[in-house]
Length: 417
Image (cartoon, rainbow, N blue to C red; front, side, top):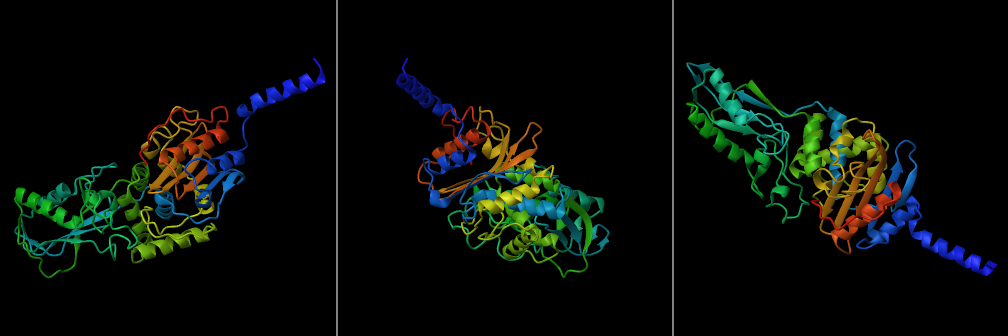
């Protein structure tokens, strides 16, 4: 075989081998942003090694974009850092009068704590507050209330939703407002309930009557409050895990509005945003371009950058509980169908975020012990094609970087983001 034929055969072999050669992480990122459905000018990607801070691949990491529900990753990180995993919401049941011969000479008052899980059908569960109230009154020997039954929701001030939420979202359960007293997810089926306290009062009064406790019906002049019972939620880490797994907007907004409460300040959306921003500024994250409006990400006025999200993820990666809030790829929550059946199933944990024209991911690559090894942030705004094509592009990119022997998703799976 002459030299020309040898060179030709070598070239053919190289060309055949090229598709099987692993691309670099940055090449994988570049290929993703040039792929179907992605607008490179409205997309950001940042993948970093946690132990060293080394960047594996990046694109537009400082570009402010709409985060959608990956905003919940910041909300939970902030409150977890402030209060710790074992903190609980406490809803006090109080009376403001004396009890004489079975008659409460005053009012029954339920003091809301902002707890989003009160009588929720979602996990984590907590005791039925209505049964607890009736039981507490019976233990005090109360069979009549001279005054009224009052719900105090003043722990949260201002409106129950930010002004920037779209009006079309508000009638739906996912767009329900957060109140100082929340009840049964502030929803009826898939519809939002504007006044959850009134639903609670109707149910409670019926239970009191069934329990043989009469009511005057009209609140009387209030005196000093005496706590007779406290309804306690599940622990904060359980609530956060449920919030992140199901991408629950009500839970996220209640957590967000609790940030000022933890600082003993007046709780509004604006005060929560300011305290959260200050919290991450003190931890030396890059907040350039970051605008925090709410805790759930439902507002399209929120802005984040891949760099900021990556820094939050890195600073939280040492917390043994935080990473467990993120759904595991191919197994859980909103990530149940992503990377299913691939070598990365169960080894990627990410929060998803989706709106019209938007698809986002933020989370971790995990090792065999489910400890985070890399942070992953993908923010796609202005999608040009189907959500499925963007999702498949993310799968290909992650497989190329972390499992280069298999860089194609098996099929067009549907997700629940």
